[in-house]
Image: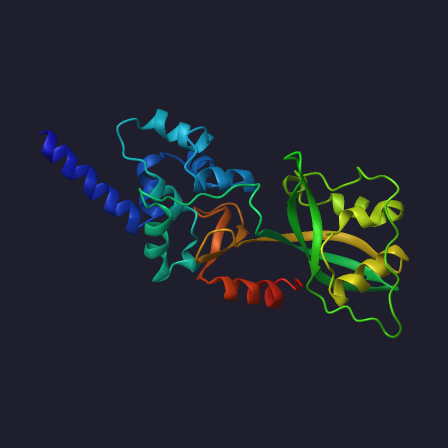
Length: 281
């Protein structure tokens, strides 16, 4: 009987891995409310927890309590984070590499190479423009962190002459809260209006021309943030891979934050990606 039980569970696991998320949701949940609770990834921190298969994650605890005899693995959870539109021949390779028992790959909020791309609407000299502001979570010496602006997708080119550099900030502690992503980066409005400390909200690394001009126009109040919108995360911290994470609308089995694109990469291709896709130096 035990061998039959093991075979049954193995077959079930295969169904989960190749027919996810439908098989997963149909097996584990009994009604629509529970389904939304189990599958939707509401915050980036929760995305990280699920990717790492953190046993303290509410969704994992819920499923453990609800179905204690059912197999639940990290491989299942990672597959649940990959949206159906990103499913391709790379998925199996990616999951196998990330879940390698001898050398598993994990991600952290404090990793270096991951970025948030925030769709923003500005008023520029009386005209509305849309562009993407690129932010990075900068880890400080005391292991705290803050969000900083590192790039701008719009090709901001000065009409002539050179841009002044921003003056040093009056308050060295002024910063974008490390949890700004949880509130949709609405703190950017306050930050971009904080002329006295504007320098603090930008990277200390070298700026390209677009970022220099962008900051210059903010400082002189010719460029004003009106609203923030869609957020896309670009995760480049894993060796050999780039993950793009987008948020999908509620009401589906793939609601919330999901991997919308999965790419194999090398160190050189990541440099090209940052320059071309993120407008970084």
